[in-house]
Image (cartoon, rainbow over all chains, first blue to last red; front, top):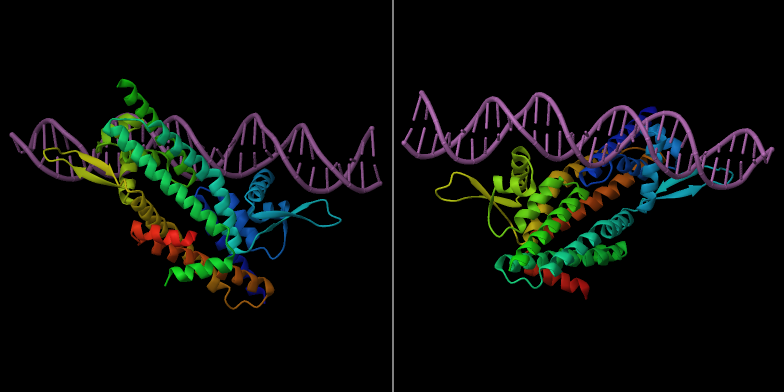
Length: 173
Length: 173
DNA sequence: ATGAACTTTCAGTAAATCCTGAAAGAAGAT
DNA sequence: ATCTTCTTTCAGGATTTACTGAAAGTTCAT
């Protein structure tokens, strides 16, 4: 059926577009999110040229974002024997995607933020003025919360999908 | 002690700067995050002019971002009797801040994303080709995960701080 | 009604971000 | 050693996003 293929392409397109928008809202480069969406829904591995052609983007753009996705652990490089080219394949398991994003965002963004909070906390440790005390208190609470959330994230991200679901069920009881 | 006031200002500055950077990484306008940081650590309410002066930004910029912060529920307008001016005050309770951000991001970003996923899922519902089935399956898993996470978020955000901590403790056991 | 004090909007500009395309680099094939 | 195929880099350009400053709007007092 011709129309099914057409519909599929349209649906995939919508998904790619929307995933791009969503990525942008969360501080991820639009193209990177689009490539991710494309590969997540690709029936097969894709080459750089195929990605370029599908999204109508330049080689440089495709290359950079593919490599970024690799560094986030969201896609991997696959080589076919007899071919010199690199192909790319996305992690498709949703839980695994979540875990990897969580791990990277923690490493790249949460840890540095915690560092700052600790600095600010330390810098105001011995202040005597009410303003100084209040600032210190605020930094302390923020640091507590962020490090706590970070540990929670670790914990969740280190779980198997099944265990997480079970725990969540308990949570809803 | 003069130096304490100087140190405090420096620490606060570092916090404001870093909170701005962090915000930007998470898709929040830098200035908005900076104003938020400023108000979170303000010993007192602040006027638009005070914010403008402290961050060296224009009236338009200050105004827009202050109103955005109000719409996120992260700061509130305070009026002093006898004064016509509006002053602003930040929510300082970290758990409350978290709840409000979670609620807004859900409303503004998660819900529309879910809508798309459901569309894509529905559009590929009856497809027979392996590619169509695979796409549908992927959309289904994503939708499941996102809606599940969203409900979890609701649940957590509706809890009192104390209850959340208790639950988390159980979680670590 | 007029004016003073403040808020809101928005056209134009500035800045940050992202993308392109071409050139340079790498590495296997002949 | 040279060619071919593919990857990587990056200066310059394009696009998006954010900011400014001034004008218009609002509200209250006189």
